[in-house]
Every structure is written in structure tokens, then in C-alpha cells.
Length: 289
Image (cartoon, rainbow, N blue to C red; front, side, top):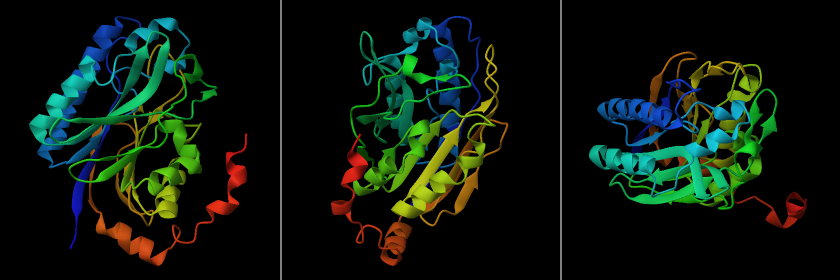
């Protein structure tokens, strides 16, 4: 029997003046996201993922300590509380990536997971932190994650999360599969000319190698006053065979939606026995520094 879950990816441009009030920026972008969540609900979406640090511009384009103000507690901060209310109202599970403040000076790039009844299920902290030109100065803002590769049983499916740069590391993708993920979401902020040639290669390959669905999402537009490039959208959902089920536009806000038949996971894994034929006894060198 088919077990179909309608999933969505919220692809959006940042709004507001990045040189102005950070509190106002967060409020504006959260309000925009809540409106798009309403749109997703109207399309019958059951699990929705928002983009990386969704309620601010991608501030890692510069190194400025004022952006530390954007971080907030999870789950006790205002953004997660607002998203819990939205999840409860729409009976929709949400993946909510924001800047997390654990305590003064201890800050993470994190995604909170909220179930369809508004229950906070837990969080994933980005494990791989880049420090790259042009303007991806993330080590200035984020500690590396310390929660491993958890998965979360929502009302509709067991999901896992990687965040942006994590997608370049197959070890994490495999760990999520071993931990039972049926769908892995990768919220990102990435620009043309840097990663676009990899965008449709790496994550469908993870889906195939691990026998699960992938939802990859990226913001859109150019963010001022920085000029690090164009966020190229093209968010997509793909199946365990690596086939694209839905792809968003390059240059416009969108809720990208597809129906995922989770029974396909068992079908694919019955053909490709990658989990049966693993040789973890021979992989010791992978964990050496």
C-alpha cells in the first residue's frame, strides 16, 4: 500500500534593509515565511522545510559581530514559538533553520524540528562550517555542531537534516540513512558560480547511495549591500532513484511541492543492497584525523 506524503520546500528572497534593525529584519522575514506557510497549507503540504537562516539575509557575507544579535534560543525563542503555532494550526511538520544562541558566545547554525501538533521534537546543528571566498565567513558566526546526525519521527515520516555545506560530505548523508531517515532536507544559501554545477549532482547521488528522498532548497536573489553573487533557487525534491520530482524556479519565490511515496524506499533498497553489503569493519581510516 502506498504511503504518500506531500512535502514542500520554501524558497524565498530575503526582505528588509540589511543595514538596519536586526530585530525588524527577523520580524519581516518571519512574517513573509508565515504567509508562504499558509500557501503551502493550501496546497496540502504535510512536511515543509524553510531555507537556511530563513529569517535574516545571509549575513555570513561579512564579518560583523552585530549579527550575533540575530541568534536566539531554541526552542524557547520567539521564532520557534511562532512556528509551533503555525504547525499546530495547519497540522504541518516544519523544519525551521535559524541562528541559535545556546548561551553567550556559544552560537550555532541550527534547524529546529516541529511536529504537526506543534510539539518541538529536537534540533540539528550544522556540523561542517565553511570559511570560503566569496563571503561565506561562517566560522566567524557558528560553532561546529555537536549533536551528531539525529533523525526525527514526525507524524508523517522520519526525517533527517543536513545544512548547506554539510551536503558535500557523504559520511553525514550515510549516517542519516543509518539513523532511519526516510527524507533528508538540506536547507542552503549558495550562489551561482560557486556551487551550481554540483547542485543537481551531489544530493541526488546521496539519495541513490542511501535509498531515501532528498529535499534540497536554496534562497533566491541578490542581497545588498553585499555582492557575493546570485542565490539561484532551483530547490528540488528527488526520489531514492535520484529522479527529480519537482524543481523550483531560479529567480522567484516559490513553494516547491511533490508527493513522496515512501514505499519506494523499501522497493529500492530491496534491489540495491547497499546497507546489507556495507563493510564498516574496513572503514576505520575514515574516522582518523
